[in-house]
Image 1 (cartoon, one colour):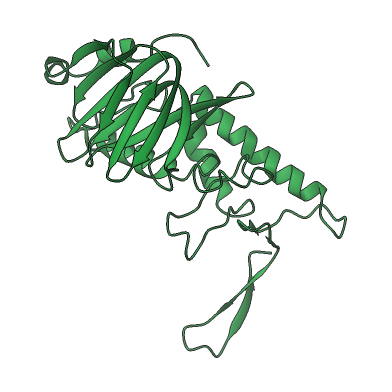
Image 2 (tube, helix red, strand yellow; image 1 turned 90 degrees about the horizontal axis):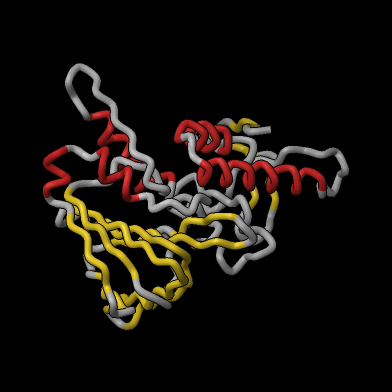
Length: 252
């Protein structure tokens, strides 16, 4: 992970009207209160690997490193907060507090972030329209990042969590990670972002897949359909027709 302050080039590439609403504050205090309407995207570094701690399935208490993002869709704004040390996020009743080990810098922007987790911006202008930029922004922040389950949904499953990504946020129905099916789409989407953070997730996904194949109980090195949160492996799934009269074997 680079040591640069990501928000510097983020600021420079913003539209003029967004820059006009941007302001920076250097906080001497070490506590920040997060509004109910704000969502936190924390960052965590472990063994030189960078992880996101998304708002979906976010633990009530967790430690982070170096930076975090706060998105407020209600007020159509977002913030980039940087520190040179660690921080702790704690949910206390209806309040959420961020305790910093040292000073922190906060930059507030108007709009929704058209950038990746590291602050690398993207912009598409097709026929004078920025609709694709807005679509990718929401898809990336609300979907791709929130489906990173390593330090959220799977944070307590240390023997399984590395490389574990969700296929849907409806974990009551599909809570597994799907190497033989959905990992292909995850890999394409993340590599298209072209940054070291998403490439790191892809590397861990493939490592998880190879690790599970190596421990195939049949010793056939099968690529499994899914790995469930409880460790159960699925190699084939049957699907019934709508009228329940026919059945097919899917996803070998």
